[in-house]
Amino acid sequence: MKTKLIICILSLFTFHLSLATFSFGVDSIKVGCVDFHKVLNESDAGKKAKSDLESLIKSKQSIIDEKGKAIEKLKSDLEKQVSVLSAEAKKSKEEELEKMLREYQRLVQDSQAEVKKKELELTDAIIKEIREIVERIGEEEGYILIVEKAGSIVLYSKKDIDITDTIIKKYNELKATPAKKKK
Image (tube, rainbow, N blue to C red):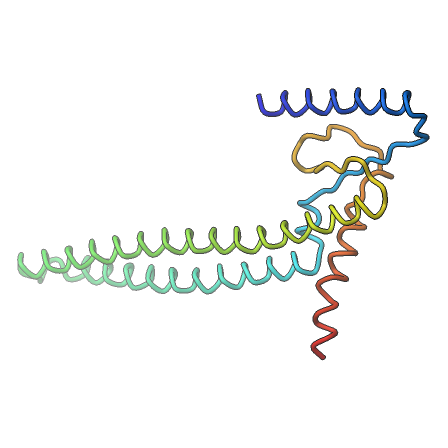
């Protein structure tokens, strides 16, 4: 439904632009598209965010693996000792194992939530900055419309209207400038 609405709006906008071109004799209409997914993956800030996220995932995974090994050891010990343990000691070990399993599951859930939150934080900050650059380029270079290519809204576009590489270049320059000033 949302896609149909967007297509309808774009169609009306295009029709309106064709009338404006006819009415006012405008020679050309400048339209562009940007692949945000590509910018996130190929810009310096996007690569750094991905690296930071991978580091967080590795640290969380090592903690999870460590906890998993402790559970496996306790489980193995319990299986080996089951015949020599009293009923009370066996029950105590089983309860300890269950408690560790619950803690493990909680740890996994909390880690996943933290990684997801960090990913949203990093990508939201980058997308906000990219939108500002897109707006500035749109104004400076005379675009009347710039659409997001990765949102599955653009079904076809000529290669020469894709300004993604320009956005990546400008974004990298913007992020590199403060670093140069600090040195």
